[in-house]
Image (cartoon, rainbow, N blue to C red; front, side, top):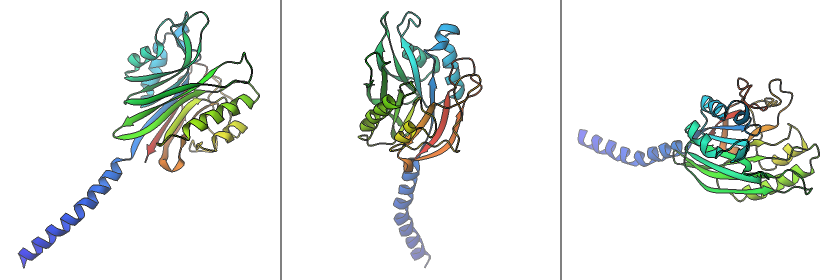
Length: 267
């Protein structure tokens, strides 16, 4: 009798083991990611306090991945490879520069992605402008691998003018690109768009704009913000759970924008 019981228990364990293993595997597929977006004001600290001040803000928040806007590289004002230097200063090993324009006096300008985790599939392109002399912006993304989970992270900085036409065209170009991607994506950037605007509504054709409340934290100008234009948004909605979303109001000297951080559970 005892022998039969032992055999039965053994068989039950054999049958349950694959099921439990699959549950553990599915659970492991969920990963927590802390993201940041930060408009550096043309690497303001590089001119006033030292580029290390921007790095200190990033290090204090300790994100997994960062989108930085208004980054100069090898210019008269910032005569160094800023993405590489920020990578070293923050300890974030992987970086990508999304080129937007060349500076007439030398060097260039664009957005940067910093990551603690390996990146691949880097891609960027210039966004369209409606007038010949308008400021050129860029959009870029990378694929990130964290704990076996792949997702995309993107950076951008949209047109700043009051008219929506250019921003709407730029959003169409961004959506046309990312709709081809096959993994979840987080987009961080200075979208020059306020909550409820025509342009944020355009983003919501694809992205979820979710900051855990009806009112996103204001981000500009420092030190007394009156509106929000810096965002972390994501898609598809069902792939994410938002755990936290905040502006870093303690960082009130390094730029004219407050950085925004969000923590996500990617399923």
